[in-house]
Image 1: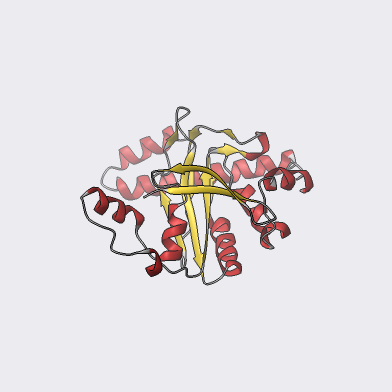
Image 2 (image 1 turned 90 degrees about the vertical axis):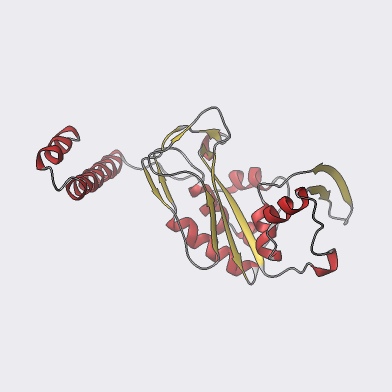
Length: 227
């Protein structure tokens, strides 16, 4: 199983780039539009079996989009952002697939790729897939590390993206034409920080009360340490 990459120009000419003899990060997109489990097929080939299908058997259904959710700062040339994930809310629902191995409380290391998860959506057409991805991105929340969720939300709202006017300069052109966002006021930042602290304290206290109901001394001691 592998990927052959090409570039295409406006005249319809194709130019060979490379062959990757492995699964790509984007393989869930292929799985959603073909209905094939590429990981399973790869293992079956490694076990000496033949592919159970040929090219004419493979049909394209619907449209799929993938966002690589990374701990990086799009406003600082996508620089990696290691640190601890203090809060994590993940999307779900019809047409949503999330391949993730991170969790709340996990520390994103500096030594490896900042990829946190692959958020993939499927729809019967491209517009539906875009709408589902927009909903999934609105439901997705990662606190504690910089991430590219807001960047993807902007991309999905961009008229050129929605019209499919894409090329290799798209990201650079997008940054050049986007409206700069105004920084939040200090009062708003303080209010958000206080709200987050209050929410964390409430959750921690509820957890301690339910988990250590048999020991009020232990529960009160932990509650005091969190103040």
